[in-house]
Length: 229
Image 1 (spheres, rainbow, N blue to C red):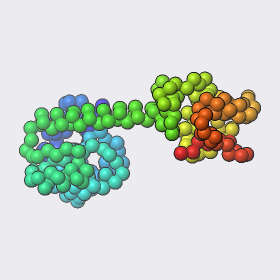
Image 2: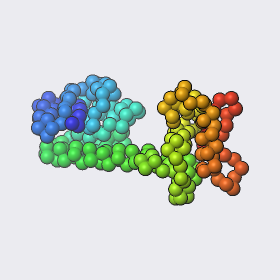
Image 3: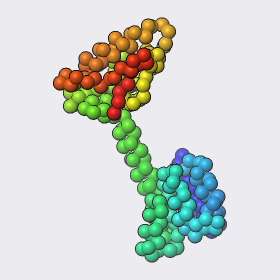
C-alpha cells in the first residue's frame, strides 16, 4: 500500500483529498503546517507528498528545499498561484509536479498514479543497474552469475565467481583471507586459509589481461587481497 503525506492548511480540502486517496487504497497522513510536514517527511518514508505552497510556519518552497537536502520523496505541489515564475520556482525547489487550485480530484489522483509509475520504473532501472558491476574491462552480471571480458564469458567455477564478486563489491577495501574464507566458503575454521591463495591464483589465471603484467587482484602482504579502482 502506497503511503501519502498531505501537507495542507485548508482543513476541508485536506480531508476531502485524504478521503479520496483512502478510497483509492492509499495509506494517508495529514498535517496542517509546513514545519510539521517537514518533520514528518524527514522522519518517515512516504511514496508521495502532496504539498501546499502557502503554509503557516514554513512555506511549501522551503519545505521542498530542505527535504531535498536529504531525501528524494516525490512531491506534488498544490497552489492557487499559477504564474510561470511560481511553477518554475516550485519545480526548481524540488517539486516533481505542480497542480494549480482549484483542480479536479480525478486529475490529482491521476498525477499521483503517474508519479508512482515513474518512480517504480526508475527504481527498477536502478536495481538492474546495480545488478551489473563494471571493473575496468570486466563485467560482472550478478543476476546471471556471469563474468565477461569484452562480451566474452569467462568460465568460472562457483567458488571463483563468489570470490571475484566479493572482491569487486569491496573495491579498494582490503579483504583478509579469513574474511574471504567466511564470505565465499561460509565458514572460517574447517578449511585452511591457504585455500584462498589457491583460488586467487585460479582466478588470476582466468581474469587477468594476458598482455599486462599487472594483476587485477593485488596481494597485501601479511593481510589478504584487494582490487583497486
